[in-house]
Length: 303
Ligand SMILES: [Ca+2]
Ligand SMILES: [Ca+2]
Ligand SMILES: [Ca+2]
Ligand SMILES: [Ca+2]
Image 1 (tube, rainbow, N blue to C red):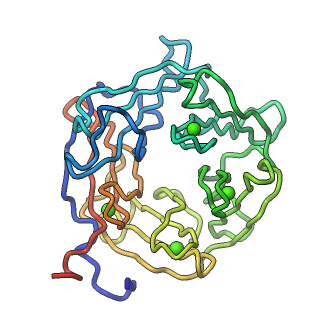
Image 2: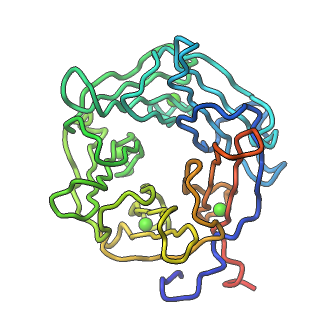
């Protein structure tokens, strides 16, 4: 049972750091930690964790197509287990994400184009993992007007087995609060099935993400504030989905000092049931991309 009034300061202590991926630091785009890529060389359990690391190279002028590189956890991220060019031309007008759209166990490449679209709406394109990202299995416009005021995330929000498109609008909202909207996969992204005004004030000091914090069947909203925090450390705040994003269930500083040289992500990296904070550091490293993970498991509550 977690409560924001408890002393949870031992949450998110770093237990692994500086796992370097083999690729040299590029002009960074779209790094993510992607659970269960199901590569033959990935051997969950061997190293105590099983989240692979994906790099979606979207704007390298020397190549004609978007490229996917996967560094497997089985190799401690030191070698590339997958490296393919996709059907997509380079695109800088949106967000790229790997997720399993067709539920065949293989992550598909999703391009959420949220600006400069022909239709004036946010558009979705998905290339299947089964085709090694050569075949488009979805190409559609969505209910959202094209805009750049927030974060886009494909996740099965309503639990019907189809990915939904979540928009977390963190700037230029009428309410001056962060707003969450969901376009359902069941409606082919044409119908908003949820529109909520949260208690978070709008801002640009961090990143927002829909997460499963407490396994109660309601998706929660995480805010990772990585600059301008009062504590001087990166802070994680989580609003419960059960409260419709009105109630804070966790709000704590982490082990990380404030830093803005990469990508922050909440994921259960080690598979113990607690969300961990992953920092993929892309700039000002010794030369390769680094992964830093702070565990969400609070030992002080158990020992
Ligand atoms: Ca798939
Ligand atoms: Ca769904
Ligand atoms: Ca929840
Ligand atoms: Ca964990």
